[in-house]
Length: 83
Ligand SMILES: [Zn+2]
Image 1: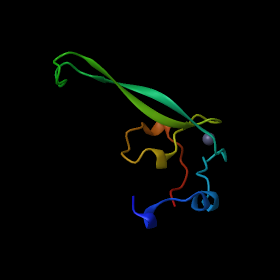
Image 2: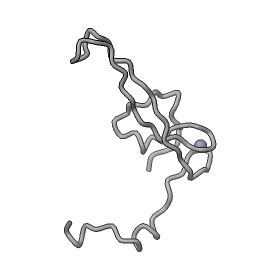
Image 3: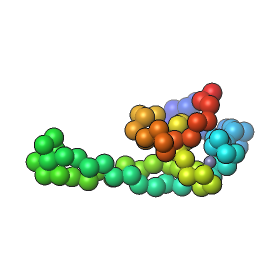
Image 4: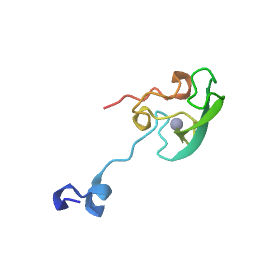
């Protein structure tokens, strides 16, 4: 990796934590399962697709920054302002 692109411990130390709208900075990985219909599944059988989601430890909502592809349903997502 290019030396100039490396994220150093010093950079990490000085960076702010991502904060949930409830103020918590601790998050946990949980799993959502998508049910892929046999009609559109490449295997022609119904498939369960596990989808990891990072949620707040305190209020259980997903931080939008951890969902860049916008795959998490709105009712599971916090309304924190993206800056
Ligand atoms: Zn929260």
